[in-house]
Length: 133
Image 1: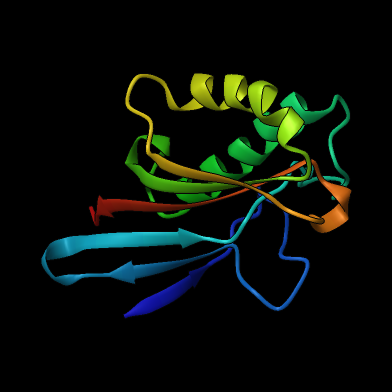
Image 2: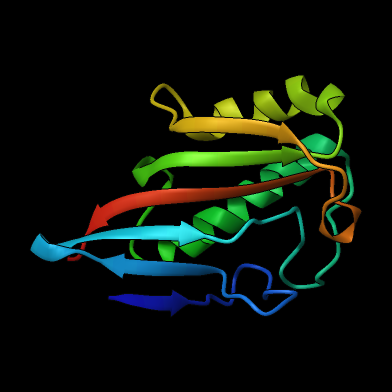
């Protein structure tokens, strides 16, 4: 059984999709599949200034806000996919990413993308698992 999730403190979807889908499993467990988040400020819907590190920080904060809407956190993330407009940005993105996920980071795939929404430098999507309270 799935249910869409939309929170106010992350950017609204800029297409026909939801910020996330929550799938409830037997035994009280749930999976959250997020849409990709770029470094948009949810108040202005503009990319944050400051380049790849600022965009990565904002994208991760947006994802954390979506997770919170399902009573989950970054600690519940099991898989991410990072899309970069330029692989030369990998070290700078990776520095911010490592700070956000700490000593037990999720599995991750990072790929170069020909173009990202709003000319963003980075987009991140994730899968998280947790329990219903």
